[in-house]
Amino acid sequence: MKVNKWQRALQKNRPASLKSLKKYCKEAWAELVKERDGYKCVLCGSTAYINAHHIITTKCVLTRYEVDCGITLCSGCHNFRITSAHVSPWILYEWLRTNRPKQYRWFLKHREAVRDEQPKLLTDDYKRILANLLKKQRSN
Image (cartoon, rainbow, N blue to C red):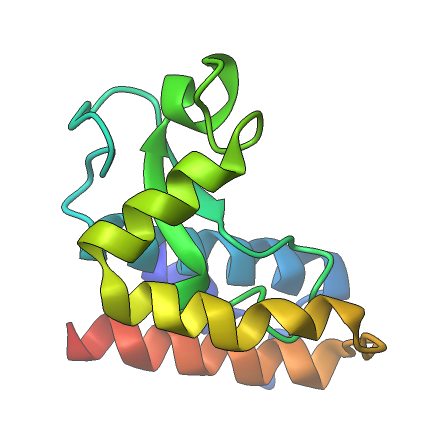
């Protein structure tokens, strides 16, 4: 795990660029999602080529780094099959409704956020997000 690299990005004497902080937030978020899901695709059980998929678009910065916004999928279930999350997202939403009702309720509550005006995140925002993600990793 890259926790040390991510922690170093938060140190005052080693300022990280905005680009690096965005990358580290995405990596830390993905790691938390995969860890929660046991490092396997929740739909087919594959452990090969797993990805953390956002159930609400990443264009929505208000939900982008919420662990509940993520689900672990193999590359087939993520992108390549006709039933994949990007080709047929309703199949994933139905799976969530049936198998993860709490996460499905979170999705229903937050999916309208994409209609809201999205704030522009600054360096300090990404530092705060990364620090919160690292706290979650330590508590798992």
